[in-house]
Length: 628
Image (tube, rainbow, N blue to C red):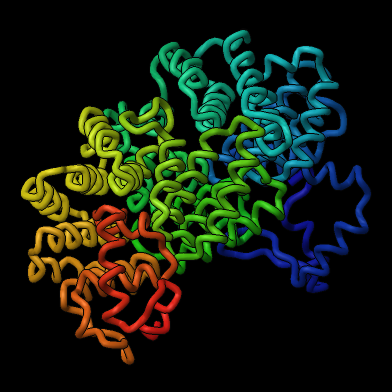
């Protein structure tokens, strides 16, 4: 209380039942919220400032509240009060309240004398608005105000980081954002102190921009800066430099760092730390280890928390759901992410969720929708030199092509991510398309390219990254193997990888390929087990193209029940029935040959024998003859 006043002075108000003092906590309470509002409303501005000042004097052990009251008690610029508010903002941000931190920083800037300090605080608030709260229009205004406050803003790290995020969400390109950041990092007078939050934030933004660009040269300034940080680079920055940039070559080196980061998450409330750890975990297939923390971020976001972190939590959960077969939830999260991007003008991050939608559509057999969405992302990304986003879209398009049996198109899209025989430098999503490329190459008789790609996978040692990559590596080697015995041994190794069943769709695809190879070498009885298991998984997922493929293989293996009404099935061999059904579905002889590992001439010969058996004379009559 002010000097000369004590609790006894509250007597009249207590007798009138306006206020009371809680005897346990010794805190003043109003009998009704409206009384409190009336007191504040009827007070003068000078009286309110006096109360704020008095409260600040007694709240010495609560720095956030003390700074806020001092800020409310101060009219003229005061650097001491501004500094206290900035410190309070840092505490608020560490607690995960980006909106409160941004608001406190703006007040700190208001009380800062004109010059570099005011500009710096406005730039920091702009960065938080762009990179956390989702307030992009406010961030732009704050950045403009910061530029007016000083002529030297170009060297401000937070200003550069905020501008880079705004650029990513505009019509400009990745290289512009990259140049802006690199200039601020490398030409400023800030040094390379690992405790400098503005520098660390700028480097995280540089990692994001470089990931968007997916080119080796974009990552070089990031690597240089990490080497200069003293005493050493923060663990999450170091891990990102290995797992998010070029995981095929350096991802395994970050395993211990990632263990430490994930181990800390159970007690972490800061959504920035959680989502940065999730990003580092992505290409080592450890999003499942971040899942619980990511859900905390999403729940906070749904309650009005920082939108940018909310987006990151959504995409991490969405991708993990796709890999582990939770496709219905993945669909819901992708839709939620797109709505969030639209609500907050995050146009530069919409592509993540469009990719998820396209990939799910492709796997479910909705090829037209998948192709249209992928083409939309490729067009958007290519204009902005965001080739990382284009790689994601090519992956979805390759999956759609595989589903409809257009292996030539699948090969072209997978090859656009990383040419066959190499894992392109700093194109991390090439890891997700390895088996897609190998399968498409084998099906289009590019056996040399398929073998070369398996060699690149082996040389990079990507099997060490996760059980999924171990599964895909052995399965790709099996697909490309010319020797049947070797192929079957490799498929067996792939399916025996510990933890491989976690990756539901990939595991089922390998089972299908294994069953196909067994049937090809006439081990029909042995083929039925993996084929039936694959069919069950595909049916549960709703992966319709692969379901049909598994059903076709099982019929050819003499296991599946034939559909009711099938005309004269006893007159066709299992292989003839399979060819007839594929031809009736609209596939060409070449496409059927690619699916069944036959020559197109053999397919034509079979059809020549099938027609008279079914009592028909042309391909167009097959569908009615088979009653499909």
